Length: 432
Image (cartoon, rainbow, N blue to C red):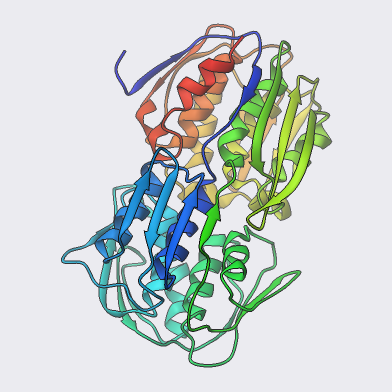
């Protein structure tokens, strides 16, 4: 079968134990902080994927020696906070939205001119949400009518600000906080009406940055150096989520996922599943490298519909396609609102999720900022679906396949390489 086609047969359950790749968001930030450190940084558990390797290549292009060690290790020879050099050409972020949006904040403190560009999907990503706060900090940044490519003229020093992002976004917050490291004086503050992922704050704090964290508020003071010799990356909750969804739906399941990040800014899916009556247990809770980690056990359950409100959406934004699938198996009607950000992901995920699930026998209606889902009392039919160049949609198609009557063929399955290159193999290993 062609690499861009994935055929997934119906399954009776997911059974056994599973580890997933290192957290994608933390892996990106590990490379960034490691590059800005003054000394060698060792990274273990690195989640190697097309997106995170784009970040590795970008920093290599800016003069940072980075060596890969085995499948999930890196050794980064940090060049210091102001040691990045403009490459000979454009920095190609490929499909890595996290890199495109956070890197300008880091480049604000460098010397020289840097231009960032990426693939067709990246060129549709709105960048004014990054450019506006950075311009307020005195950074010269140009976009192409609000879209990539983006050019940053580093100044070496920026002005601190107090900023409230108009859209809840950990990427915007992170760009502003990284730029704040280079402020000449004072404190850079980001205020959030809705809490977003806090991996940047946690890692910067471990690297010696004074971080003031309160509900709805993050403040950082500038520093002269970052010191973080070792970074251990836990398993990616978003990569585990498809398996959690399938094991909840399939009646023959008994699945354990090991060493997962359970950062509360990332695990809104668990809170919603609890409301829906799912049987998901967390064990061996602990801290690893400043991040909360646990093992998760999943058993099948009869689900009931619920509403997913805008306030919780940032904590499960990547899992919303799977929540629509789970709602398709729940008794009653589920409404999801406040998820307009899905329209500017790798695909318009509201449109692609509705098309995929309805093609396979679901009853999903698109709303301007979400979904209305009518649960059905039986397995979806299955069929042939298009991943639309989107790794999350490719994973959704595969999970629909194991939960369907007839199976699913996913076109464009090579998109899985963006975040989880061996997803299909790990799924096959636990299918019963």
